[in-house]
Structures are given as structure tokens and as C-alpha cells.
Length: 451
Image (cartoon, rainbow, N blue to C red):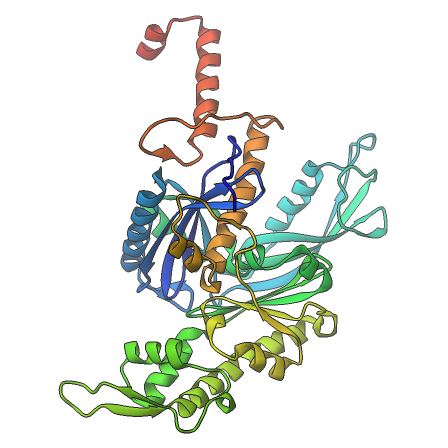
């Protein structure tokens, strides 16, 4: 790509993916060409997370701090605010209908009316120990006229909407926020991971046609089903790449790190695609004889677990009621999508077309980013991290417009060693407030400071 100029008002945003196998921090912003420019990336091993849920706060905080330090050094940005992903088996989704009777009959329906409707959904009574994470509007109905996707600007008294509500365990949410807080950071937003992944690997055409996104991570497999551009179903399955590694460890009687290497280097999701006479030699422990493992037998172990995961996915697709409406088929992403012959296995089990989702569509290649870093970044295992960054940028731009009264003020980049994330917005707001108070009090700078 050619040299690109940044939009001067584009906010710098940070995405934090607390996964089962890795903790990833990505710093980036939007360019003039509506692409995402990654300024820095930091990775750390995740040893305090089990199946997408925090199981050890201290180890997780350590991993977050390590990843933040690397990303901060690469991007030359002082990281303070992050957009965090959430997953885990505790995630549930439900459908609900909301109704709002408007009092301002002479004005058109505005964003405030929709926000009011969404706020009311957050007040729903949930089972004990659960809280609402996302409220996603689907179709709207205005004065008994159904099937309206964007009601802003229309006239009407009675505004109704179907909502897709995603909830999670209060303790799981609090533990994530505690980890972020203990690492010296502030969570701007908590985002469901399959929603984030969908931002980075799915096109608008696919969402419109109907598609099932399957994000195979280390501890969980996340599912998000879209149809007519609207999210229809979400689910989290408590199996992932780590389940496959454990099966190899037990089935082939090897160490866990050896099992992981066998999976990534020689693993295949279809045993029939491998030859009988292919043998892998695994070193023995402390002078013991090396162990010989057949590639075909290894594939049989992997295939058994992957078939189980795909059957769970297929059950969720069928229970959503959109099995016959998915023209876009299935898109697999996440680290598990790198497994050889997985697309063929998915097509065989579900009967739907399948492709691997790469998050390169939204990324811009910068001169500062090394070629190896860029090539690593477009791997499916970074789909969630880049999706969190995209979601964070959209939210930050909305916040910026609201704070500037609908106008985007150009903010010049300051020449200093480290830039504070989103500092420009809050700094200007504080300065304006101070000036207003001083003018009101009619005092000099020195007198104001004394007071």
C-alpha cells in the first residue's frame, strides 16, 4: 500500500483480548482511507484464564501488564483506557420486545428515543447472579408498521423493537474488570468476543445474506449468527483448541508442550487425508527411548474432538432456526481455524459452505510496522483482538462527536515522547470547564489556583 495520511482527529484506541492461551493488547487508529492502522501489539502468556473465565487474578494481571508494556513501547503511547473482550460458558442470550410511547408528537424519532428504549432493556430483571452485557436492537415497529431497520428521522408515536439481549455472570464480569483495574487500566467498554470477531472477519454482504461465525479459541468456541445484517443468535461452547491438545496428550502419552507442537505442526482434522506410513519421532524423557507416533493416528484423535465441537456448533445453528437461511454458510476463525482440513470437516458435518476468516480486510499496512509483524497480525488467531480495536474506535468516534456537540474538532498531534489515549478529548473539556468557572468568578489564574 502507498503512504497514508492519518485523520488528525482520529482517536488512538486500545483493544485487550484476555484469552485462554494468550493475552493480547493492540493499539491503533483509523486512517483517511477508513482502514485500521496498528501502532503496536503486545502479547503475553495467559496462565490465569480457564475456558474464557478468569481463574487467577494475580497471574492474569501479570499477563496484562506484560502485554501492555510491550504494546506501549512499540506504539509510543501511554495506555490508560482499554476495550476488553468477554467470553465463557456463562454467556447467555435471549430475545425481548420493548415498547416506548413518545410524548413529543411534533418531532421525528431521534437517537435519544432509541437510547431510551435500550436503557429500559437494561432494567430487565435477570436471574440472580446475572447481569446484562449487551442490548442489540433488531427490527423496529413504528405505529404497527413492522420491519423497519433504521427508524431515526421517521414520524410516529408508538415505537417498538425486538432486542437480542446478551447476559453473563456478575462474578465473571467483576473479575475481568478487577484484573483490568489492578493492572492500572480503565475499561471503556466490555464487548462480547464473537461480536468483536465478526467486526474483523465478516463483510456486510455476508451478514445480510446470512452467516454463522465460529471462533475457535483456546478454551471456548464462540458462535454468532447473522441474517439480514442483524445478529440473531449467540452462544459459547466450553471446548476449544486446548481440549484437542489434552486429547493428544492422553491419547499419544506425551507431554503437554509436545502435544501442542504435534497439533500445530502435524495436526489434521481429517484422518483420511493422511498416509499410513508417515511417522513422527518424539524425544523421550531423560534418556528414555524416543516415541514414534503415526500421523494418521494423531489425526484420528484430533478429528474425534473437532467433530464433537462442530456438532455442538451445528446444534446451535439448528436451534437458532436459521439453518436454511445461511447463504454465506460458516466462517471459522480463531487459532483453531489454522488446523489443516478443518473447512472440509465443517462442510461434511453441517452441509454448509465454509471458509477461514482472516482479519486483513480492515488492516492498513504502515511503514512503521515490520513485514513479519503484519503477516503475523493477519492470522485468524488475532480476529478477536482486531475486532475489539475496531469496536473501540467506533465507540470513541461516537463519544468524540457527542462531546464536541456533533462537530469533530481537529486535534494536532503533540510532540512528546508518549501520548495519553483519548487525553485530547477530556483535556479540552476540563480546560473549557475551568475557563468557564474562572470567568464566572472573575479572578486571575493565581487567585483561582489559591482558591
